[in-house]
Image (cartoon, rainbow, N blue to C red; front, top):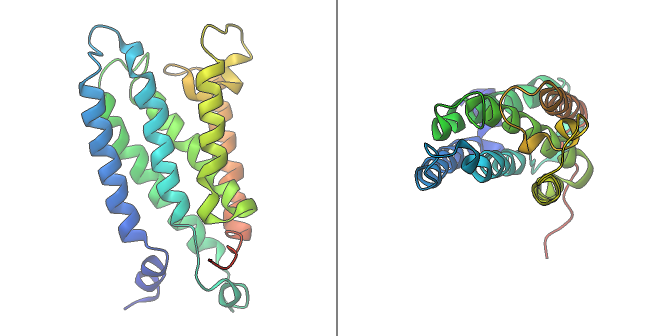
Length: 200
């Protein structure tokens, strides 16, 4: 096996790819039962939760079983980490919009891609701080809180702090999600996931 294949296998990347495909299938199934042709706003749960599930899958693949070896390696690890995170994020951003085709101006593909980027960025940053096993927790808490708090809220600031619930191409929502992704990806590429404590 080549070095890249060994790296992918050690991070359970093939399993993560299968889980992302399953997440997409679940999102497509869930979106079909929402009668979104009557009201595209009914897609909000799918547009918010499917990227969150995909980010959790990506976050668990950021785990390394050989943290000490990684830190003492001769070659820098940041290109591999960045390639892994970028490839899985690109896959999620390509697959998940299949669940919400049409109505791009409301809760369609642009909102799904934006949320996939933002949630993955938060998860990657959390992996650096908390470890890969708990990396999904801050994103889950944030998206859940925003889902509950943003109902009926108006104003310019809401497009920034409530970016997971915003329709289409809101500039403030895109800026917040892209910033989360860039900062999270940079932190993970530079530092790697925090070593998880011993099990049991």
